[in-house]
Each structure stands twice: as structure tokens, then as C-alpha cells.
Image 1 (spheres, rainbow, N blue to C red):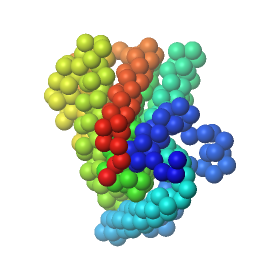
Image 2 (image 1 turned 180 degrees about the vertical axis):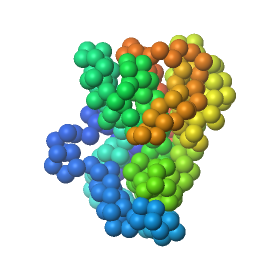
Image 3 (image 1 turned 90 degrees about the horizontal axis):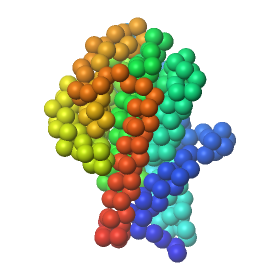
Image 4 (image 1 turned 90 degrees about the vertical axis):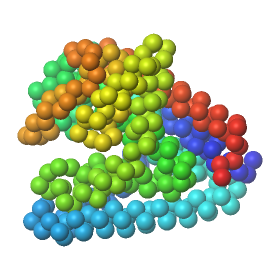
Length: 324
């Protein structure tokens, strides 16, 4: 078979990454596409960011980084996609490219490490594990704080790492997926409220908000559907609609509020980012005292979300056939 309809490539990439994640040996040898993007962004940061000393210049430099970098990567991905379309079995490589930019299994694995560390080795190990998936200060986190941070990260990253990439690959093919991952990576690295990045990261943060607007809300609805076997689908959707806007982010509150109510928990609340304290709003009205078992329950909900996504992709593939 020399060619596969595009929707089947998306489904295949989703399943492949869900089965094996990104191979550790490949990461050791060549890194990861996101790490390549990160290296480009870090280099531009070092060379062009005045760390707030010249605010207007920083805004322009950040705009040029995201704009020119995004256009270059979108164009390169478009050329690669066109070339693969005419190569015999080029679809195999395109499927692998798609899989490499999804993070369903890797997200599960990272959060599961936190669960295992917290439940089997205690709070100090849990702090070390959770520090790899959150940006907040973990030094003073107790069991409740570690578990809450892990569940919140799982909820938000379900949008950033799974639903949003799938949304953009379906909307704009491989180029759309590459562009989204570049913008999201830029936001992660430079889209911060700090003296160094307040101006330089402004474009990255705003564009990331725009590109995640629909996917974040879709993710919240998917968590609601995933809560149906627990009898909490309606509650999840109601609380999502009520509490999502309380979050400081225009997008993160939607999946977090839906997950909070689906699990009958409270997420959010006060936390620290470095030396800066944030008195964040609470999402949901359930139990705030989380532990390691709640991380596992959240992972189970996340697995049901992935199953729903897979069924939806399969349904589209069987109904539509070739993506136009």
C-alpha cells in the first residue's frame, strides 16, 4: 500500500505513541523535535532578550522569534509533507512524525512516576518526581500538594499534549501540528510573567492562548464524557462552565475544572512559583485533601478520555475516509 488517507495517519500516530511513547534510545541519540525547537528558542532568548531593559525591543524580538520561526517551521513541514506524499511508503514516515509530536503515553508515564514515588517512597521522592512536570515551587509541598499538582498538570497537559495537537493536525495537517508545538514550546519557555519574559514572551503567550482556546474547551467536554461511567458527566460539565473562568489562564481552567468535578475534588488554590506566591481560585467543590490514590483515579479518567478520542478518530476515518 503506497498511500494512506490522512485521517488514518493521524489515528495511526495516536495509537503508535499511545503504545510506545517516544523511544528513550531515540531521544538519547537524536533528541526530540520539541527539544530542537526549545534549543532554537533558547538561542534566540540569549541573543535578543534584554531582560526588560529595553521593553519595546523585547516585544519586537519576541514577535519576530515566534513569527519568523513559526513561518519557517510551517513551510518546512509543508515541504516535507508534500515530499512524503509522493514517496513510496512515505506515509510511514509521516505517521512517525505525527506520533513524535503527540504526548498521550509520555504524559501518562510522567504522572504515573509521581504516583509511584509518592505512594511507595514518600513525600521527598514525590517532590522530586512532580518537579519534572510542574513549574511551581515544590520544596514545601506535602502529600496533598504533590497529588494536587500532579492531577492539575495531567488535566492541563491533556489539552496541550493530546487534544490540541490532534486538533491542529486535523485542521492544517503536519504543518499545523508543527506550528502548534513550536508556539506551545515557546510559551512554556518564555511566556512567563517575570522581569525577563514579560515583554519578550508576550507574543508566544498570546498566540498560545489563541491556539489552545478551542482545544482546552474540547478537553473539558471530553473529561465530562469520560466521567459518564462514574455518574458525574453532568456535574463535570456544570462545574466546568461555572468555575473555568476563575482560573488565571483563559484555557487551563476548562480541563482542570472538569476533572475536579469528575473526581469530586477541589483543584487550584494557593501555590508558589519560585519566590512568587499566587492565591489562585479553587475549582470544584469536592475534597481538597488529595493523596496518591487520587492521582491513579485521575489517570484512569485520562485513559477513558484517550479511548474516547481514539473512537472518535476511528469513527471519522471509517465515515469520511480520506481527509480533504
